[in-house]
Amino acid sequence: MTVQLTAGAERPVVRLRAVAKNYDAGAVQVAALRGVSLEIPQNCFSMLVGPSGSGKTTLLNLIGCIDAPTEGTVEVCGEAIAAFGDNALSDFRARNIGFIFQNFSLVPVLSAYENVEYPLLLVGMAPAERRRRTLAMLDAVGLAAQARQRPNELSGGQKQRVAIARALVKQPQLVLADEPTANLDTATGASIIELMRRIQVELRTSFVFSTHDPHLMSHADETFTIRDGALVQPGLH
Ligand SMILES: Nc1ncnc2c1ncn2[C@@H]1O[C@H](COP(=O)(O)OP(=O)(O)OP(=O)(O)O)[C@@H](O)[C@H]1O
Image (tube, rainbow, N blue to C red):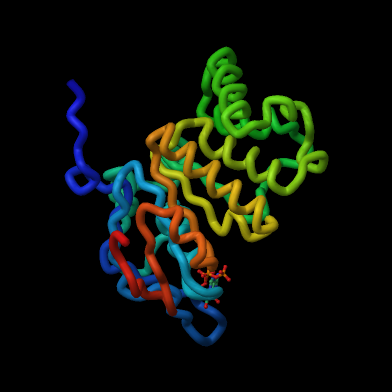
């Protein structure tokens, strides 16, 4: 018998405590985040919503271990990030976190197949398993027929599907998407959110995506609203 734990009983995949982030901008300091504490449960589709400049990218960069907080603690997949050295942190990120960006960030000279395969090369996976997983992910995002095409031969929505496959192919515990629909028309953006949601449920991973579009709220299990660097509406809705 499988015992299904509730989200509240499991260890959260992300835990931030009293996080602040300041940037030096010439003579002045910008307080990009102030006193942010949050927990993101496992197997959850979460949305980070707020206007431009509110701190969404800064927060995703801290959760993605790309940047360190000025104050407070960041725990991802049960690990205290401050305890890692640079090499251990890169390795941790490569194994546990997938990233999706608004400008897709695909490698232009690689085919869709090669873009998706790339993270598996980085973690040294054997060729047969690499091929199996890459083909399965391309199929999951509906791009099996476009495997040989390069990014400039794909539509915006298809490029973002490749980026989703690339983020998920190593089966990370956590996927972060920074405004994944910002460069897509409304219908394509909606289909990308639906695809991310379907894959999140199938693979039982955790997604956090940022947007300035509150209309997407209905898709999320949990919404965090951020304004001027502080959370204003934490918790389940
Ligand atoms: N490298 C940096 N140096 C100085 N200030 C920065 C830097 N990065 C971000 N900021 C400032 O921090 C604040 C939060 O920026 P952030 O990019 O996190 O917001 P955002 O909500 O992602 O915005 P957008 O929706 O426009 O991408 C803004 O005031 C921004 O100008």
